[in-house]
Length: 321
Image (cartoon, rainbow, N blue to C red; front, top):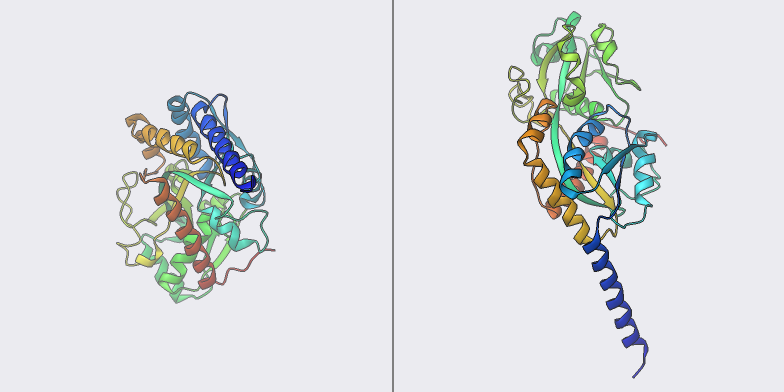
């Protein structure tokens, strides 16, 4: 009998034992979490709140490191090539799908190079209009857009951002001709000044501006109203169910991260998300936790990436490079 087969079996056994030991001893040092977007962004803000609590459950600091650039590509690429040892993660979000829409050649595969670990939660975008626009409802906005095709403008935090995609969903659902104006900083000041007509801003990023008195909240992009804005109708209530858009934030690891470690991070995060104090902090950001298994979250991410690609096709969003 050839010695190759027994030797291969022994090698596999040793490897499995090493992986098992690694998982059993994990974690023995601080855990690095890359935020591919700047501090203050919706995904970064949500992650900071959640990871602070998860660190306490795990027993090691989960250190969030901002590494923005190229619409999240820089941070995602860093994690995709990281050692899959359970000590490097990335705050994944809806932007994981938009990256593949905006770039023909990414330095990573958004599906194959990551393991979705756990969902932090979802939040709607808030449709706000300048007070100077005179819009009181979403119906007012749609009527104005139909009366003057091409005249109305909506801001976004850039092509492919959640604000852009939410705006495109409404444009397609309401069949209106409006102009998209992307801004590096999101363009909220332009809307508040009346130079841009409206903006679908993530709820976590909108909180501070909503009390300025310069904006009118027309709707939220969720299927139903949210507790933080009880007087704002959902886009479904307003008659546009196809305009539903919810920004999700979660945690992903490099592919081949041991399943046992992935499960431990998932379970620790789910435990942290049950804490009433954390739930309250997330509620103030408009973030709703959505408990789901590792497998269910993986399917959610894959479906979201596919849905984003379909939306980009319908909206004629072309890759930037």
